[in-house]
Length: 441
Image 1 (cartoon, helix red, strand yellow):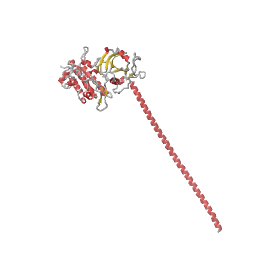
Image 2 (cartoon, rainbow, N blue to C red):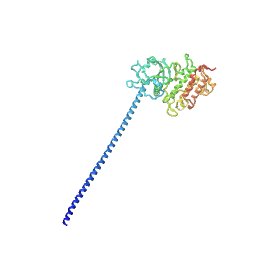
Image 3 (spheres, rainbow, N blue to C red):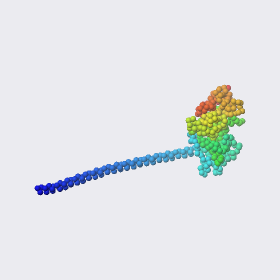
Image 4 (cartoon, rainbow, N blue to C red):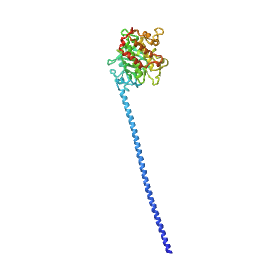
């Protein structure tokens, strides 16, 4: 019994040892498995993080490249615009002739010194040579050059007087005959008129507008140099003819009417923005050696409005007899105001009368008031014709011209035609060669 108990006792520790070893073996195996699983999971996380970092770097690089590309394109566009502007500013006047677009408000410093800006016009310097500085084809002159050209602004060279000053005949150093307009009146109006003429005529180019050749802005002096128009103003030929000049015949009057219509059409329809002359009248219509008409004096001009009705409010300027009723009463100015003034000039060409003449009988003082009821009556309109024409005109053409004049001087602006319509109505009359062969009996 004792042996059996001893063997049992010995067997128990062995079993315990065996169980313990087995348990330890299982624990060891489980630890190794968990360690391997953790290592595999850590490897997956590291791969994902690496991919995320790579994707982020690629996205940032693409965004930076896009931004750089946009900046480069903007700089290239800016450089092209500057180059285009530079080319335009240096282009010759022939380029302007090919374009009817107008860009307002030229930035010109009239009081700058040549040493600073190169664009002023001061005493001294090399007065024997023409300055080379030009603004869009317009020459800058020294005051001394213009003194020499006009023989010290001699009274014998005065060819006209206007609201702002006198016009002199001058001969430049190269022998060119020009008209030199000296602005006398001081103040803001004179300065505005000077700047407006330089700004407009240095940009607008039409065969029916007088050409600005140059200017001088020497300290307090303001002068404009224009092409010389050999036959002077339309007013002189219609109302103050001398013994040397012949009365204007019918065909010449029609051609003058068409030239003036084309000038206003250009200002209203082709300039951008549109330009309202505001002082269109006979004295501002100049005639060249072939009696072709050109419109002058843009000192009072206004830019048209971008509004639908095209109205702008402004100070009332102009000459009595030429002012449209709505402009004279309210100061509201539109391109139709010029149409009315054109109608008055057309009546002057037709009748030979001035717009206002208090020496005439009662009821005939104001040309428009007297003429308007007669323009649609064939018998009466024939009696209105200027006697200087001596009956040498076409009856058919007379009726058409009278109808055009009647439409242009309508009291209501909306009933007046566009200058484009006037031009189209006059072209057949001027181009018709048989007009000169038909006379009144």
